[in-house]
Length: 420
Image (cartoon, rainbow, N blue to C red; front, top):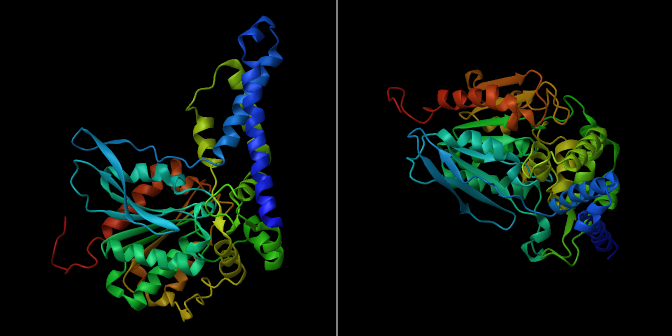
């Protein structure tokens, strides 16, 4: 019960901060307060507005917010999110563009399950939608999953990806962003051994920790500096009474968020101070740059405890993927079994989460894949988020990824057949 009490205490603190912000905003905004021309009242109202919004977003699931898409025909087409496969811990969704012909490029975008919702890759989806059929792994918040649904660890995650790839078929181009890169590589190898005809056409790994020890960062140093017992004791809690997953062991999103913020505390503090001053001066808007970023950044989700712990132990501490020793249901997954799936890695030169060297290590593991089917790219000046959602992605990396997909579009076709 002490872990459940801690979870509820965190939620109580969050709720209280949201209430304090709402109270300050409301009281300082009373018309009668205008009779007292004190700048402190404007500042208090601004502080309350920013504080209420920030703490409210921490438990809100963001919307994809992709309503329409302008296509090559010059018309705006409605975009509808369809659930292709529904599972307790995550769904496979498709962005269906109504009234548009099906696009030849079919892309499965494997979103991270690392504390944020799949909407973290919203801008990535938007950039791919004009000329691709886009499917995304939509992971669920563990606090909303009843205990009766069972466990979910790295092996279950891998098997989810296997099922999603089977559902979409061999003409799929998989793009894995950050955390899922090693498990997506393992899922592809699993198919290479058990169901070769279901393998995807191409696999693009973006900023993922295939070999975390290749270039150590603060993330990898933390993974090696604590024991699994310490990690379980300090990070794992039981979901409180407020949610459907009451009693489930999780790594709380609020703890993950505190870790995210602590890595760049000064920058975040300045961002919120500046936003409070903008609100006080009447310069802020509902969808300004600050709100667009932090509405997504602050929206966090709980991860199943067994997934978080097995990720740290098996991917970071034991480096099972890097050593090609990963197993699923007791059977070894041999990454060298991949022989005809074109694989490309993408890294950012300034990535401080998955530093250069960690992702490109995948190519050395692909011992059965010809060199002509391997490719890599190091983006100068790009940080972690920039390589899949920022300017570097839009201007440089996205065209390279699509060219890579197109250049391998004929993998399953006879050599003398020209496929449009």
